[in-house]
Image (cartoon, rainbow, N blue to C red; front, top):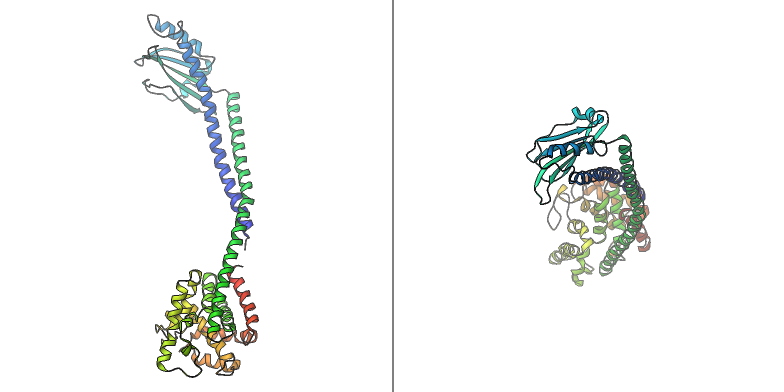
Length: 415
């Protein structure tokens, strides 16, 4: 099983790499776009400044001559193609550099100008060439539209390399920052997990202590040493392991086994501690301990998981049990497992009213009850475990039985 530390390292590392790639890519795109924005902003500003000069303003009687002069002034520096249009979209002047003439046929055509705000387009041409197309509406001093300027700039190799280098550096810094954040988060996650684990263990231990205290209180009231609860819970868990029970179901079985007679707290002493045989009326009262036990554990938070054992540990395979008369697989598995452990421990233990049975005698009774009292498959499985269970748990002291159960609890409750 992979430890939490390794899982956390793998998860945080993977997430950090993915985020670094995404953030780095986004940063690269944004940085490249910002670099292009800077180039375009300079071009727009220079173009407007020039076209507002008296000698180049494409207005008045000499508008066409001024437009041609402005177009010639604009190429070779910021632009490779310069076009100036009238307010109605008629081309007034067009000039281009040799480089502009070479790329003109590859540039996508566009509609007649009719825009109100400046903007630009970035276009990739064959041969890894890139151009920036600038569109600028021209306005008079009183903000009247007087024409349009459109320029095309072939981004030189050195500038493309500079833009890419700057964008790459920004992307690498962002990616590194994300990875460093992931590295910084790892010890924090580990520490928080350790704190959570410690708190969880403390809470779980307090719950188990409460379960044991309640179980001992029940046993004392029933004139028992309390060892029976420890033993049957361990026996039931041992049988449950053999049939593959684990996780929360195993935890419910252990809690329910330990608290199976919780309802006896509500039975009058005259009946609960009567040394002789109970009358029919007294037996009816005694049987109410199942319903009382259900009510007790159902409202006990974490212990409510043991309700299935408490509510059904007197049901029988053939339907002759109580209180509901459930039969066969309708009886919850945890209750069927517990029934075998409970009867086996009762048979093999010393009681004021009987001597302990031998292992062989106890198993004979279990086999006779298979198919009537007990789940026959579970009896068969238990037969293979009975010798070890008998030697390990039967007639042990309360302290020894408690130690055995604590080992099982730590195993299945993750303590």
